[in-house]
Amino acid sequence: MLDPTRFVTQIRAWASDLGFSQIGVASIDLSSAEPGLLEWLSQGFHGDMHYMAAHGLKRARPAELVPGTVSVITARMDYLPRDTPAGWQAVEWSRLERPTEGTVSAYARGRDYHKVLRQRLQKLADQMRQVLEQAPAPSSFQEPFAYRVFTDSAPVLEVELATRSGLGWRGKHTLALNRQGGSMFFLGEIFVNLALPVTAPVSVHCGQCQACITACPTGAIVAPYRLDARRCISYLTIEHAGPIPEDLRPLIGNRIYGCDDCQLACPWNKYAQTSTVPDFDAREAMSWVSLIQAMKTSEEDFLRLTEGSAIRRIGHERWLRNVAVALGNALAHPLHASEAQAIRQSLQERLIHPSDLVREHVQWALAQDH
Ligand code: SF4
Ligand code: SF4
Image (cartoon, rainbow, N blue to C red; front, side):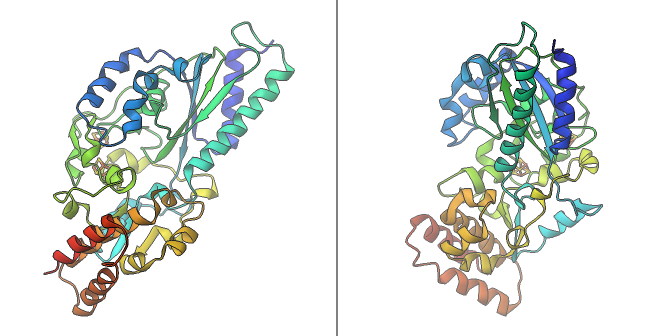
């Protein structure tokens, strides 16, 4: 007879071989998270991520989202590229000081994590199924085995599930944080119809620290543990489809896809681990780009260069919008005359772009010229 506790131990070993750093098991009763979720939504902090509101309380009720779910296996996977140097935070801060070069959030420099995690969670579930098909299962395991994998999926309260199952605690920046791994990891889940022993949460270690709140360029962390996504650069450059609010544009600097500042500032990220999988190794073409080149990139080249990358998800139009904001911010800096002229020219070439969104951001960028 399969023992649930030993089964979880087995799952952990498989997961480790698949590149996961930690596995937990959460129960499906997230009812105590419902008031906070409703309040966050009622304040409009989700911006135009309407899908978050559309799923309503299903997000906090795994058995409503996937009927038959009894437990959630939670997983985290470190994503810093394997060649990340010691003191990488200083390297990242210095990137933000180079106005003519664009920065892409560290997590997006390699292969699209959605694909990497989904495939590996799927493999993990396949291994579980093979064992479940061979050994007699306890009565707390429903048959046949049913599951569904998620990663960075809107209907799932990922951080809530992760923190309840001991993968870390929720930092004041609202991300999960781990004593051995900082916050530079992805989360994924497998909803299963098996009653597995839940893992205990860990204690919170933010203490009096406010570093993430202070570091946030746009003041998006409006209070500890409370993020106004409408002000968050990650949201504005990735999720948000329309114009970027003008008052926030100068604060975005050269960040063209996501933002890591709250994580760079977090003292726990001195313990962030490099990934064991090669998929997250940075692709040179997209991790560190000349803004002028980025503005000149055709849609065809954008699609080719971002093949298999999460960046592709935002599409060429949003890419140009983001790059225009960064170029406008560059023009606001003292630059060599030739450099400023090259920026102006790259922007002017986009003044005839068919998209209103792109043209408006390009016009704004040109107006930042001093
Ligand atoms: S990702 Fe950037 S903008 Fe968003 S909360 Fe963190 S520091 Fe602020
Ligand atoms: S920076 Fe400080 S307050 Fe923010 S998540 Fe890290 S430890 Fe917590």
